[in-house]
Image (tube, rainbow, N blue to C red; front, side, top):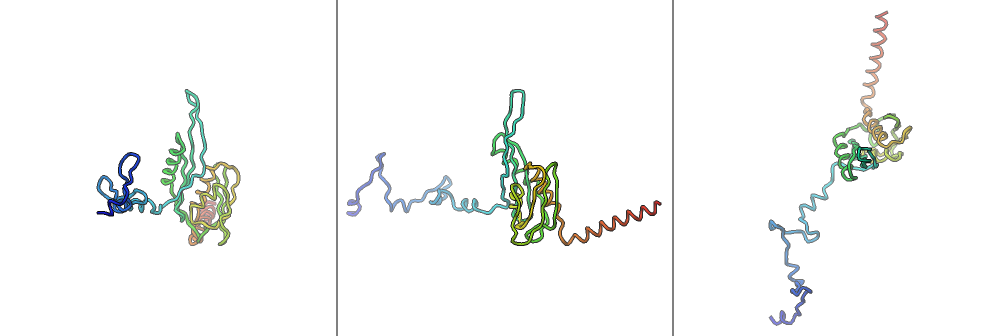
Length: 221
């Protein structure tokens, strides 16, 4: 009792007594439901763990353009976003959308990219074979590369390939520099990949088809 009387009382500016260190150490903050909060952030621990859980897909905003449309009252300004998502394996998707602001445009593009997901074949950490795809004026050439080469590509191609499991690739963008068309060309090239085990089957089918055509022409004569 004498010790408590000897300790000076600390009063705040508002005139209330300041909480001592011993009292603060034993006090627990609780939410409306009576559940204790985590002291480090004022949040419950189960919610902290839920936030740091790994996401299935990563997304990258490749490009944002400001577009305008002429209407009766003048010009209406909007934003167009190009977004790519992938799982760093063999799934990739791209989406393009417009919105009144950047945030809404990115959200719409991400939603479209999730709906347009594709799976493609891989040969280890590179693509299965050389491919050249063309979308309108954009022409993209992609070649497989040896281990340790890395991704030799620029701009849009590098951003999209970085979301896949492809670690070695040589690419060249020919023709138009339109980023949307290049993105679609890259996705078409990945979609066109044929696994090595199916090469022989595909070649045999093509040979059989050509032989059948020659035979039918001879019979017609």
